[in-house]
Every structure is written in structure tokens, then in C-alpha cells.
Amino acid sequence: MMLLLLLLLLLLFLILHQPTSVLSSSQLSPFTQISTSMYVSSPGHEEKTHSHKNLVIALVVVTTSLAALILFCLFFRIYYTKYYSSKSTKKNVQTSGQDAERGVALAPFLSKFSSIKVVDKKGCVPIIDYKQIEKGTNNFKESNILGEGGFGCVYKARLDDNLVVAVKKLHCEKSQYAEKEFENEVDLLSKIQHPNIISLLGCSSHEDTKFLVYELMQNGSLETQLHGPSRGSALTWHMRMKIALDTARGLKYLHEHCCPPVIHRDLKSSNILLDASFSAKVSDFGLAIIDGSQNKININLSGTLGYVAPEYILDGKLTDKSDVYAFGVVLLELLLGRKPVEKLAPLQCQSIVTWAMPQLTDRSKLPNIVDPVIKDTMDLKHLYQVAAVAVLCVQPEPSYRPLITDVLHSLIPLVPVELGGTLRVSQMTQQLFFPIDPCTQ
Image (cartoon, rainbow, N blue to C red; front, top):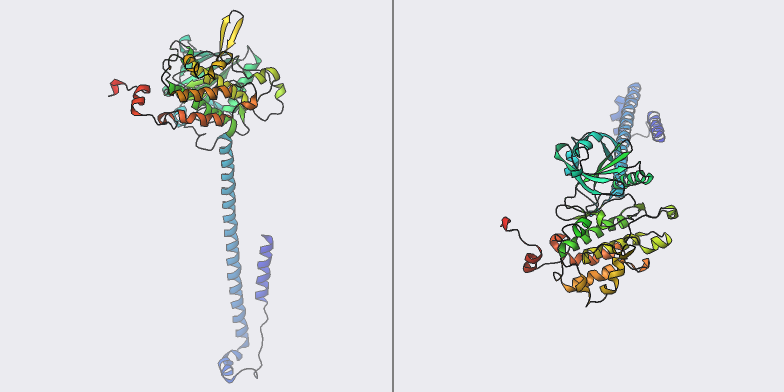
């Protein structure tokens, strides 16, 4: 810019000091001599006029150049600011998920959160006033307990504006791991947004107790639906396939779209939550780790018996295929209606994988071990396909297991279009598997 200004000043100097040529009378034609005789008679006036013209031209040139220079600088600054701010925004969007499958509409929650007393923020997560949580759970009344975990209970809470949420209470004084899991879950879920992953709405703390506030999932956990009092009666074959598909979508996002990838490490039926329409969301990220960490040897062996992959138990090897193994166990639960581990005697247990494996590959035996609730309600070809996927997922050798994206593509054709798949269900089949409520007719 300084160089350009110096060039403009030099141009002005040259214009103002440009020498004028003088022609002799012999060089002028008669007509020129006559026409210029009036100027010759007043040489001082001619020099003044010529100098004045040069000055005006110089001023016009310099002014125009300076204006152009200022406009150029202004436009460059605007472009620079817009370019880098949009680049920064795109980068931030990429870390939290930018394709359509990753997005989740939190507007209904966030709009209601505007009236809730937020005392601070932990990263991107609002820190909610403890008094509101205490009041919303009716002082943690036992009747508001939705479930129990390793470090505390999950309560139903009604916050301001009648916003109903789920509150996980973690007793950190009982274990050093509770604090770590709290920090880990807040850190991960503050960056993750996906329709099939639970949404963290806020957190809080009081003395040695930590609280995590989630969206409420009206139909509880898959474990409760399958192994609770209803014994899976609310889950048809197609509903079960939808739950499996939703879970696979959540895992695919963690494994392939998060950067760096995330290994859940504790996938199980109790950590798959169901909303009012039985859409599934993966929850509980306290044990989740970032894949690519080179120091996995120092990671404590964690997980739930029956879901932990054999290579993780024996050698401490942890990869995305460990989550695929756990998914295979959940798929067997959906298919057979059995728990992942069942007691045969006081000191003897049997896993669902050990018990089912010989029968899953025998087409004559497979229909007889299916959950009685869904027996004879599905196309046998679909049953064989799901069994084959489950068998591949629970292979002892990790390299033989499929990627979760391959599992996802295998399940999509088995789920009706109405439930998020590509299967076209006939009118008669729809009435069989999606009975119409007579009150709505």
C-alpha cells in the first residue's frame, strides 16, 4: 500500500513538472500562426493556464486513485472477514456433525430451556441450578425413579414450563470413576448430535453429587421392554428391526462420522432407550473413548458381562469391532427374547452367544428358538438374514466381524418404509403387524 502511494506522488510530480515544447515561427503553418497569435502576444497567461490544467488533472488522477485504493481495501477486508468466519463456522459444524443423518432438532427443548435458571456453562452444556432439579424430582422421590445405574438412579423431573426430562444422579463420593464418567459424558455428548444418540440438555452438581439432564425417553430402555413385566409384548417383529436399525445408525455415526471416531464400549439393551414412537437412541457414554488413542493399554477393562468382546477380555484389544460384537448380542436379544447371560446353577452361567450359536446356523432349528412373542410373524427369509447378521457380529475373531455400516445396509431392506427402512409392506401385512386402533376410525 505504501509503495502504491509513493507511485501516485511520483506521478503527480511528473505531471506538475512536465516540460512544454516551444515551436519556432518557421515551423508553424500560416493558419497556425494566425490562430496562435493571440496566445503569443500573452506568454505569461499561456503558461499559467497550462500549469492550472496540469494541476487539475493531477488532482483528479490522485483523488480517483486514492478513492479506488480505499474501496479496494474496504472490499478486501469485507471478503477476508466473511471468508474466514464462514470457514471457521464450517469447521465447527463439521466437528459436531454436518450431514443430514447427523442433525437433531433440539429446538423444542432449547426454546423451553430459555426460562430455566442456568447458572453457568460447562463447555457448550448449560449448568442448571441444583434447586430446580431438586424441586423437579420432588426432592428425588422414590416414585420418580426411572431406573438404576452403577453410580446412582435416573429420575423423572418436571422443570419450569412443564419440561419433563430425565435426570441421572451420580454419587461421586462412592467411586473415583463416577467423576470421570461424568466428565467424559459431558465432554462427548456436548459435541455429538444425532437422531439416534441421546441428547444431553444440561448438567449440575451439588457437593459430591453430579447430575446429567437428558431428554425423556417415554418407553424406557430396550432391556425393560424385552425382559421386564411386558416380556416384549409391545415389540413386533418390524418394531424390533427398527430398533436394531436405529441402533446401527447411532453406532455408524460414532464410528464413521465423528472425528476422531468414538468407541462406545458399553453398548447393551439397558443403554438403548426408546421414545414415544419406539425410535431407539444410544445412551450412557461414561465409558466411551476416542478411537485412535495410542495408549489403550492404560484403559481400565470395563463393560458388562455378556456384551464384552472376547479379544477385549483376553488381550485388552479395543476397536470399533468391539461395539459390533455388543450389537450382535443385542440383535440376539431382539431375535430370541433371552437375556445376554442366564444362570443355569448358582455358580454356573451361560451366555446367549454360546447357547444360540449352534442353532442359529441350522434353518430347521432356528424358527423354534425365536421369541414366542414374534414367532411365525415374519418372513422366514428375513429371519434367516437377521440370524446370519447376528452370527457374523459375534464372531470370536474381530476381523471376521462386519463393519457397522455393512450391518446397517443389511437391515435397511428388512424395515418397513413407515419405520425408516425400504421394505414395502402389503395392506394385509400392515393390518397384521400395525393393528389400527378402532377408536381412531
